[in-house]
Length: 130
Image (cartoon, rainbow, N blue to C red):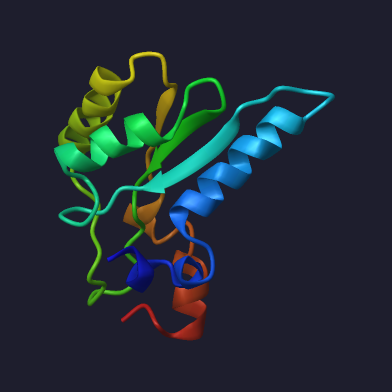
C-alpha cells in the first residue's frame, strides 16, 4: 500500500501530485523541460505488469520522463528489495510497450558492495546498519 511506504500520500494523493506536476510543466515560460519522475522499483511491491501499464498511462511523454531507481538495502532486516537487473529491464520494457514515446531510464545502484551506496554511510555512522 502506497500510504505505508510514502507518508506524504496521506496529505497529497498520487493523482494530485501528477496533476500539479502537469500544470507546472504547462505553465513554465522559460523552458519546457520534462518533469522527472523517480520511481523506486521494489520487488513484489510495485513491479507488476499492471504497475508498468499504470505508469505508462499516468505519465504523458509530453510532460514527464521516468527514472526507475533501485533500492539500497540499509539494514539486514530491510523488508524492501530491488528486483534483479533482468526483472527491472523487463519492467522498463513493459512500460515502453504501453507508451513507446515515454523516456524511461534506469538508475542502477552503485557502491552497495562496498557500503558506499546512497544512505549506507549515514546508516553505518548512526549504527542502524546491523
